[in-house]
Image (cartoon, rainbow, N blue to C red):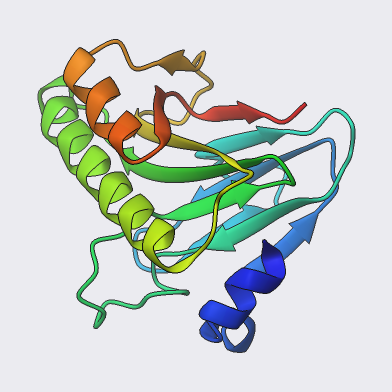
Length: 172
């Protein structure tokens, strides 16, 4: 999959958008003005945590402001992480105001659907499980929950993906 992404999106290599990480756990930080990065500062903000107890190769792909920039017309999510079996699309919307969560959640789902649709049109995911994570709210850890809204389930299932809410992904 890594080679396929580099072939279809040559800017991945040029812009340094794809990184392979084998840490048992690592965090992702989403800058408002720049692309997402793996958080290496132990005191830094972590918006999404990847658990990798087997310490296998997990690939981190910065999508927004790296693979695609602000001039690209495609609506897109922030990043993806993947291994040999699972490809995970992630959109982060940080807010502490409860009143903004519903609109941020709708926008996150829209960006995830657009990105999944684009990627499945240009890449082959025949042997991959597709997951989408809408991370809306604060940065403290929250348990991951599968989407319970039937409309959301149906819309993402049509794309071959499962929608989750939360900010942690465990690769097994």
